Image 1 (cartoon, rainbow over the protein chains, first blue to last red):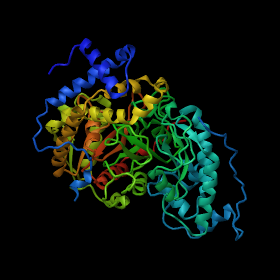
Image 2: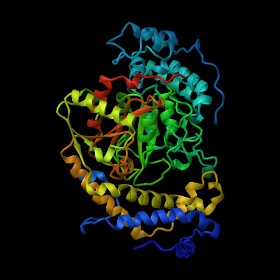
Image 3: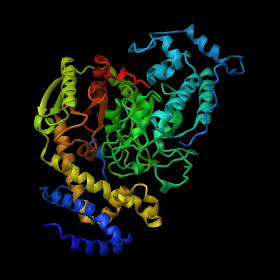
Amino acid sequence: MSIPSDDDLRQMMRVLSEVVGIPLSAERIEVVLPEYKNLLQRVENLNQVEIPVEIESDLVFDLSRAQS
Amino acid sequence: MNAVPPPPPTENSKFENSNGLTRRSFLKGAAASAAAPLFAHGLASMASAQSDPTLLTIAEAGRLIASRRLSPVELMDATLARIDRLQPIVGAFITVVPEAAREDALAAEREIMRGAYRGPLHGIPFGVKDTHYTQGVLTTASSPVLGDFYPEWDATVVARLKAAGSILVGKLNLPEWSFGGETPGTHNPWNLSRSPAGSSGGSGAAVASRQLAASTGGDTSGSIRGPSTANGVVGMMPTYGRVSRYGVVAISWSLDHVGPMTRTVEDNALMLRVMAGYDPNDLSTAKVPVPDYTRALTRTVRGLRIAIPNDSLIGRSNPEALAAFREAIGVIEGLGANVREIDMPPTFRFGDDAQRIIRISEAAAYHRPFLIADPAKYEPSPRVRRDVEAASLLTAPQYLRALQVRALWVRESRELMADLDALIIPGSTSPASFQTPFSLNGLPWLNVPIGFSETTGLPLGMGIVGAAFAEEVLYTIGQAYQQATDWHTRVPAL
């Protein structure tokens, strides 16, 4: 998956930010865009990891489970 | 800094209890029952300790207080005088509470005199990173967002340190919301033109400059480890879940660690013993018994299985840092440990990405109400607002994917540590960065000073990493190293 173009991202960010309840102005979108792209690139990196199907998300991060 | 200027030290204060004992007799009375040598490391003579008790470690001061050779009031007076002198130079504190500290020191002295001695931390001054809630004391997280916030209760770690008899002196500086590896306003005591690193930079600088022997920090991406290296102090990022985060302003709930920052390994063990343990207010804390970490200080490193990263991972590190690291490893090998080089498991290289997604997603959730209420208050730190707003747009599956990668990395880390007692890493490394992958897997990491840069004058450090809840082994190795070297005894010229 490639990261969308900046124009597509701007549109996405405008709509998404409204949906999540922290609406971003056009000015704020320009400030946030580079960091949002950075995060999407990192997500893309993680999508390349081969994860065995039995590996669950660690929703409760509790290392003491290994002790019991 | 928020503080009322302290009154002059009360050298001749006439404290008397109901039996007519004065402070002088508090001290003299114990001399008759003097026991074994006072300073296990021979770091300072009795004369210099009595002339400047701020040079004492927690262990040294604790022994003197226990045997009534040093009054908590005298120690506190000297501490506050040193803070008063160095605050304009180092800038470690946001808030100091001199009057309350003096009252508590007096109360400690009275308790000890009537035989109610609480242990090695009784009467010892301490400071906490200004993310820790402190009852009735301003808590800022270095941000105007919290406004004039005076918590009504102590963070669990603060309460535990107080219950052990330690005395809160003040709140230590950090970057806004603990975001970042610098601490604006605080200077490195070893080179005042340089940074103390961050985000627990105030804590590291206060300990290095002998304003405090005991402080706490918080680590999500290296914020205890980095300042410990930069300030030449001992810092423990304990196993995730070893120490309660209750009452500590969060960056990221599943990545934040709270730990002690001290001058010596022994002091660190003394503090962690008090701070650690299950807390019903923080369900991430583990129901794993807390050992007496000081028992680990006398164990041998002979035969311990230690690994260091291979050259492909650290070969491009700063040459001075690498040379000091190799020398430190040589010391540990010379003490009988078995050392070998290893590679990292495959998921290691994704650790930084996963840590970032998890960290900033959780931070976004934490900051959401503040951002909605008044985003303008984030203006002093535009980076925090930008990062949190960006993370607010991430989706649940994207966050969960990062959690899956973490689960895989935790499994690989457990397998890595299964046939090792410790992994030792240079304080700063290149090309690989170890800090974020090793907060991601939650394993304990003890930073120990290993020398100084001839170029910058700044300290150098190494990180000793263990299996989950294996802090004892880290203390064994760190203590053995400190007994064979003297980096931790150096004092910055301030």
